[in-house]
Length: 377
Image (cartoon, rainbow, N blue to C red; front, side, top):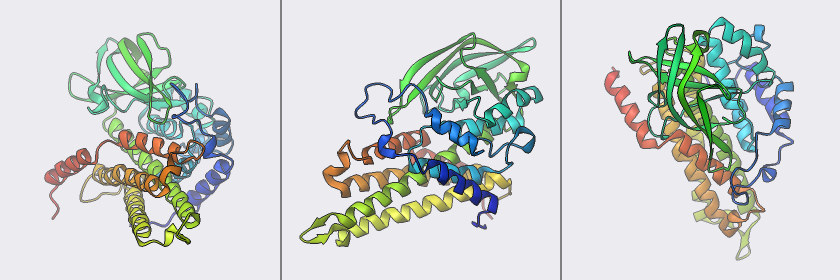
């Protein structure tokens, strides 16, 4: 395993740092001060800057105006976005476009990809199922009726659902296969209800009631949903890492200046030990993230399927980001709850990421099942 980034990957990260340099986390709407949604839509000005910097087309081929990079480059950019709490559908739209490129019909590619790469179309993914705990593909049924597909079911907590032009919806067929439906916003047979995340962002509950789609708008290739699900999970781990790193930096800055008994509290052993533990969490989150991203990007074989590496990354990210923000709040004291200071915003976003990843125990169980099915020799 080589953790050295290529020049192209480093250039993507550098471009992201340039774009996000002007984003102020304490200007992000606070869920503690805003009833309902913190805003009607995503940060469209920032979205336009990302498009101008060619960061929305990282995973797309040159024929669609993209850079042809991989999951590692996307995760590097996502890591930078989380440091400043960037309110943009970068993960969802990039991952969905990559799935269409890898598995979609030629008509869907021609219609969507170039526009998505330019930021003119926004894509999202319904990845949380009916309750947020069951597999997303089990929440919707898909059956063929002549030359069309008919979808019925409910997907909850769909990110950016009210802003996206297309939502990719996983659904199961009567034969046990999983397909990905490209559902346009406001499509006949769909109902979108408003939900809210812990970060205050507007989510959507998407109901499909005999919604009909043409065959060209349904991806039925084997492995398409599994690949997209792993990419989304790995990207979420990258967001957790970037957020956690920024929170630990804030904690170090604060404890280095805050004095008790005439000394900075950072010099107290109890404070230093807690910060050191969180640093170890972040390094474990980083190592497991790049392992998972590398498996997805390279397709390299391993003793376990790539889903095993993704499960390990999710275990560390879900547990690690929670521990980092909890320790930060503790070491900041009452100052951490001050709504004029950005830490409470990071805490709300961290909780949303933790819930999106799901409990570590579930990923440990999934990892155990993979180990049982693929004995290490």
